[in-house]
Amino acid sequence: MPANDYPWSDDHRHRIKHSTEKAEKYLHRKTKKHNAEMALIRRALPLLTDVKTILDAPCGVGRATIMLAQSGYVVTGIDLGEGALEFAGKAVREAKVAATIEKQDLVKLDYADGQFDAVLCFRLIHHLPTPHHRDEIIAELCRVAKNYVLISYLSPWSYTSAQRLLKTKLGIKYSVQNITPLTEIQGYFKRHGFRLAKDYAQAKLIHSLHLAVFARE
Image 1: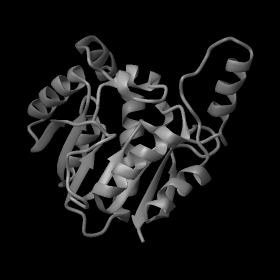
Image 2: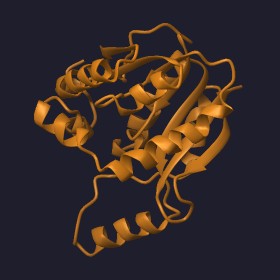
Image 3: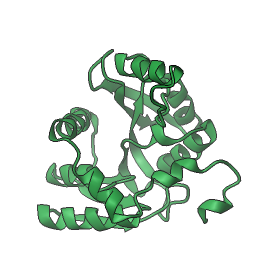
Image 4: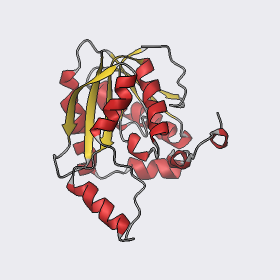
C-alpha cells in the first residue's frame, strides 16, 4: 500500500532509508553506541530456547542481522528502504555470513503464520507516533513469530528520557522519538497471545533504551 493511501498520519515513514545517503549516514554509527546496542541484544539471546530462525525486522543496514548470523542463527533481514537494503546486502557479503536480505513492509508481511522461531524488532517502535501504528506492526510481528518477539523501546523512566522531554518543552530541541511505558507494550502483546518473559535495560535509570522479550503463551 503506498504511503499516501494510509488513513492516518504516516510521518514516521519518512524515516525509512530509501536513499543511499540516509543509509550510509546510519551505517557510520558511533562504534561505542553500536557495540552497546549489540551487547543489549546478546544479553537476551540466552533466554531463547529451540530457536534457529530469526527475522530481523527492520534490519536497517544489517547491523543486528550480521551479529545474529555470526551467533549461529539462520537470519532473514527485511526493510522497506532501498538504500538500507543495498547497504545491508553489501554488509552481509563483506562480513561473509549467510543471511537473507529482503524487501518487506512491516504493515503486511509476506510470510506465513509462525514462519520464524523468533523476531527481532530493534529501534523502530519509538519512531511510531500513535498506538494504532504500534499495535498494527506488533500484530504482524506476533503473527509471523512462532515462539518469541524481541522488541526495543524507549522507557520514560530514565535520565535521557527526562532530558529529552525537558529540551522539547523548552523549545531547545524537538524529539521525534516516542517514549513508551513497558505496560503499554505489554498490552499490545497480550492482545496477540504473548507474555513478557524478561525486560533488559541498556543502563537502568540512565539510558532510555530497553529490549523486552515476549514469549508466546
